[in-house]
Image (cartoon, rainbow, N blue to C red):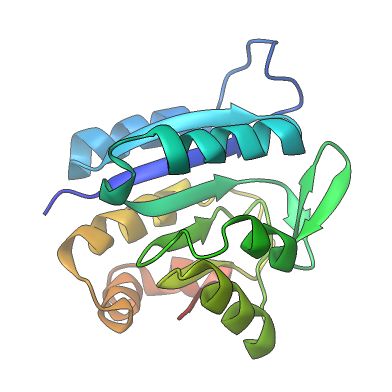
Length: 183
């Protein structure tokens, strides 16, 4: 089963060329695991909404995208866009009812340590199957573990099986980074 992934990365300015550290990992993901992906950037809430609006309303293949991958700075379960903090509740309201069955994953650039009320609200409002990310701040980008997670999502539908397989294959890394999946 082929998996499709949509990746949105925050950059300081979309009009200036930059070297993304995520792009090589996405290329590797495609070559090694066959995960088809689309990569886009945003630099403020307007381009964030525009990119996601295009995905939700204009991409005829949106139903094929099982994974949404966000690479944003953030803390305390808030992502930062153009020096403004947006809570997961605010993000959930943007996606209201539009993510049925999708898995939402955050890179470790935003720490994600959710209480049950917060993750349940996100899942209930968006319709997403799960939300995942990391609770520990570590000095390396999570792309190695992210790519493994995305590849496992190709093999398994059940989120419990996905997490068990991830920890079986990379227990020490997953534990030290504090991988969490809420469903």
